[in-house]
Length: 253
Ligand code: NDP
Image (cartoon, rainbow, N blue to C red; front, side, top):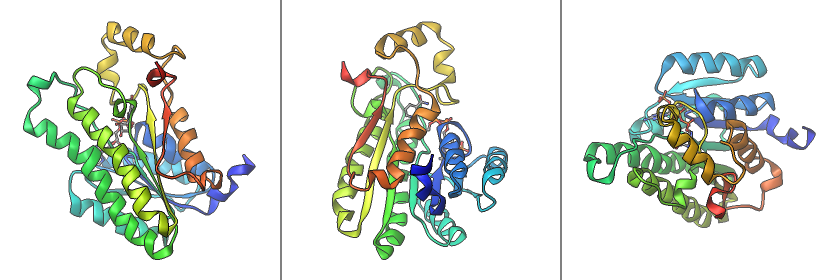
């Protein structure tokens, strides 16, 4: 794809790049010759995914980091900046869900979800923003969810975290526009990954989900990657503060 050739010079950090959607995003960037750093907690998948990335571009590595710990996040961004000798794009992809009826959500559940999906996203953007402001250039892409826009049972904390991340995206886009930093989000519908495997073990839940997606099927990680690559590319240089919904029409109903 020649029109994405500019990605070959990009220095990119993908949080949660070791598996699921983040891995697909990281591999696609590496296929376009971008230099990619992935992060996560699980060393085995960090290593195996890094080996995949290095098949396309030797200048890819991983950093072990916990998105629930602000110091760990700052250290991750600093290390990624040093390794890459710059930071053009940060994809805030790491995220969790603990589906539970609202009455059963514990303080620990709430904190884990909000800390990872919202607080972690903010402090990662903040640390990257320090470097990007100094360079007067950068892109931050937050992976949110269709659950930022609709309600759904057993997802009070998750919907709150992703709705907050959409608002965070707009607030940072406005504040950092004078520094030529674009902040956008991508909001997928359901995709089969480790995050959703347990949910889809319930066939009736799977069937219900399909009836809510007008396109009649789940999204694939590559559908999310397409939107991320677009936002990272020069084609999207005048887009900021927006969220692209990759939801097969779920939120259009
Ligand atoms: P997975 O469960 O497959 O992967 C989650 C990723 O996040 C892993 O790489 C994991 O790495 C990382 N992660 C989670 N918690 C932490 C933490 N505390 N510190 C560091 N890394 C962490 O999920 P998906 O790939 O499905 O989801 C990716 C993103 O897409 C999430 O933000 C999710 O909310 C969003 N999304 C997913 C949808 C889906 O249907 N799958 C739908 C809509 C949005 P490790 O465990 O090694 O730390």
